[in-house]
Amino acid sequence: MSATHHPGSSPQEHNSSPSVAPESPQAQGESSQAPGDSPQADFEEDDSAYGDDGENSTTTTVAATILEYRELHGRTFQNFPTTEYWGPNDDKQNEQLDIGHHMLTLLLDGKLFLAPISLNPQKVIDVGTGTGIWAIDFADAHPSAMVIGTDLSPIQPCFVPPNLKFELDDAQLEWTYEENSFDFVHIRCLMGSINDWAKLYSDVFRPDGYIESLEMDIQFTSDDGSVKPGDVMYDWSTLFINAGETMRRTFKIPKMSRRLIEAAGFVDVVETKYKVPVGGWMEDKKWKEVGRWNLLYLKEGLEGMALFILKNILRWEYTEVQALLGRMRSALNDKKNHAYYEM
Figure (spheres, rainbow, N blue to C red):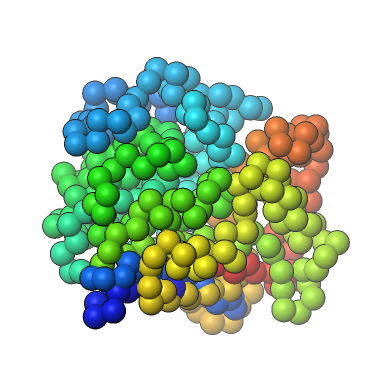
């Protein structure tokens, strides 16, 4: 993890990635501070759980077309007019996101974040909030804060803490929030989704503010040679790295985030790295548990990750996608594979 702060103060930003109940991994993350100081049926346009524009009148509002989800082989995907995002937004994918939240909380030893923020934060944003589970937990734990969760899909629950609101927004567009308005910015698991990370980090910069960015390196590997080039798990990662370059939305952000965060103006950046095991092959109790949850997280998300990217970006046939998914499931279930990825 990496953190930065202005001289004389101590804000920081964290960067982290998802983890599973592993047997032997370590994790990584970054934090830094600025120097100085069923989908559409469940969503109502006037639902009080979703903030109206208020001070940010240009923030994207709910439009009927956004609720007309696109379908691909039985899975639904967001229909935000300004972007392409590879992840489904259906119940199966949302359950996988919540599994990932539990795994990441285990990874961080029960914490929601690592940044040394104030005990009484005032305004916090969770960019790419997904189901909103992190934002809900944070708002419950920090009643002093006004928390905003943004996402491309209105998949969040209606009943949430009174200090939390969800907004439909595309983080790749012009930042519509007031300058220097958030004292803590939380970003995680947006790999392959952002076309200009430098701009995003610059947009959220605030003197004396913190940012925590937690992203997973999708390259599966091992220390004992059980996962190596030519193996399906290793080559799976290469497919998505290449697709990210085609989409101009990199999957390699964990290797770039510290440099970009510092370039945005954050100082005293602290980077924490984790090896997140896949499966319960590690002997350590914590990592065994993380690895088990990580395995479940990955298995539940395999099709959701592959379908749009392999079919629409790499132009695979559906039968080819399913064949690869079968090989990946077998590899994930093979206890001889001591795989991990970094965060």
